[in-house]
Image (cartoon, rainbow, N blue to C red):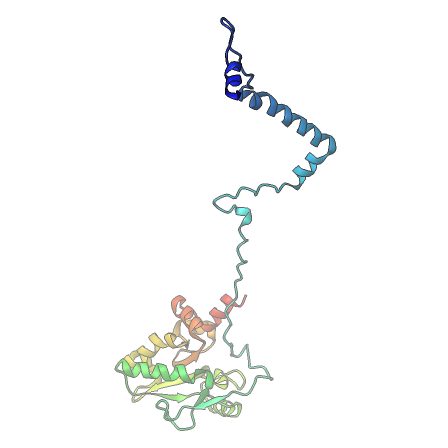
Length: 262
């Protein structure tokens, strides 16, 4: 019975049009209904202030970073500081040792280099470079050189000054570099002191002493500046830097101090 009734319901009268089911087109919701819903929701958010709160809570996009740092982000270069070199002590008739000049710490040079007598001493500051210079001279094939003088006390300087007939080669007490222990006299066996520059060994010391921090203190062409006659035997320790400048620019100690002491 049920089957017959259902079959009857499907029978249509002749000439009758078939019934069509009403269907909503698929694009209708996307094109019409969704924009309507979106505009309605947006109006609600605007009216309630919720949209502003949402926008303010949203994180800001990170700033764009350039591939290379700008000049403003680079730290400024450090300032250039130019320091004057430490000046060697100048001792002469115009610049005597101060009364509070400290006692010189000396080293006995006996058996360290060849010496004229066992009492010769120098400041401990120059002992090592002095020994190095003597060893270098020996390595270069020279021999016969020895220390003939070094540190002098004020009493010894006074006695030497009083006994000197020619004061052009000696300073009064307080005005001699020998009282600092920084100066030495170098002699060569069987060679007069005044002829040292004519001897190969003497020439070696004059030409190479700067490499060990020494200078020929009283050159012949600087006598009018130093106030002392030419002494090819007298060497003064001033340090490696000052000795190189004096050698390269042909300066005596007075000229060096005037150049860098201003």
